[in-house]
Length: 575
Image (cartoon, rainbow, N blue to C red; front, side, top):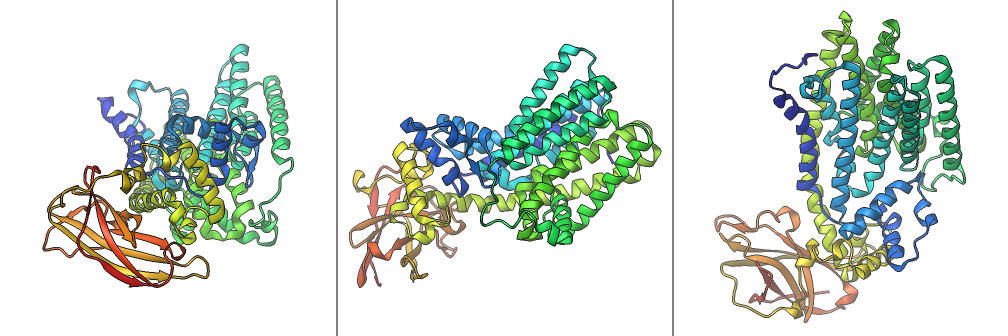
């Protein structure tokens, strides 16, 4: 159990413990992130870069609704980051971690003001808040740059509520006006970052209602915040249309129990993403929330906890808004990691309120409630972090292969292009934009560019100790674009980094293969006693080869990528 006071006299240890989750978040992106555009990024972001570079970008393009969201501010942020990095999506992932750092800093400052500790003596009970803020259960938001929109909405909402808290805690009129202005600005940023962000206005109003402001100032600021919020709600709702493939927003009226189950599962998914376990945890969290709120009211500590109550309200309303639009997809969809960024706020708010009740000497919260809640938090986050890390390693391998597919899109089958975007014809247009302006995988420092044009390289000496084999040549016809999949292995015995890539020569036509496929990229050499496994593959549309007999040979790129070497041996296959 975590003590309410710093355990270590040397606060550097406590600060290190609190900072470690943030370091883990950045490390997660470093180890598991990959630079490749994916899915929504193609239709929501890539066209903007094309228009920006041609000088045709307009305000309407940036303001345009994406599904149920208006992602105006995320688009501005993505354009800025993309312009500076040639749309390296890894930069968006690191920016997401920075936003989470801002949220965690705000939690620290709010706790400092409420509990009165010095930054040089941060209590150890802040560690779980940091742990939850950077929980890897948010893996989708951390490893997909486009999801910076959700994290920006969350961070901006947290900052807005913090400024409202500062407003209620100061007696200076000038300071109150500044804090109110800043709260409105960040609430606006949250509103036009995702549809969940619009809930910040209701959360802010509830915060002002229970704040310690006197009646006159409370009425004044509450009225102003409500009017500004009403304008934002009107703008957000204007011309709103439910996306065609989404369930009806009235689904909850016809299936109220499934709707409630979705909300409970979504909040339970903040700690663990296993269906039945998360429902039980969701019920437990709901019970803890009711106990905490009742205790606050009973002990007259509502006003001093207005900040934590506001993020609880924001979390609840955000998940309700998600459920209204997505509950029809089933409770399994509630466990999507992208929503954990919002549902985690509920757990953080409840935990902080329980700490306040314990710190204020309320005996019923000294041992059983807070201690058990801490155990649930640590167990859930620990399990989620381990499973999310394993997920991340697989996600990186898939993303790197997707980067190769995107880079070689003109000669890739439609079925493979659909891994990146559901409409292969549209993907070719978007990929053409990126290629034209040299962005993302087509930039000079991108991974696929390590495969130079074969015609530009000289043929060099033999690469020593090569073991090569073509393990499978399979024709696939899914009713659309028929293609042939060629897999094989290429290893250098006991020599690391001897092979820099693999090219397939089919009847004189050169096709770069994805080298490192099937999870073997991190194993570029092997001991002769080991059985080689496939580590390269390539799918080639049949239309590029034609029917009949074909001759396949393999050419290898040297480890320094300065020359190639044709490997003796040819393989015959028939289409």
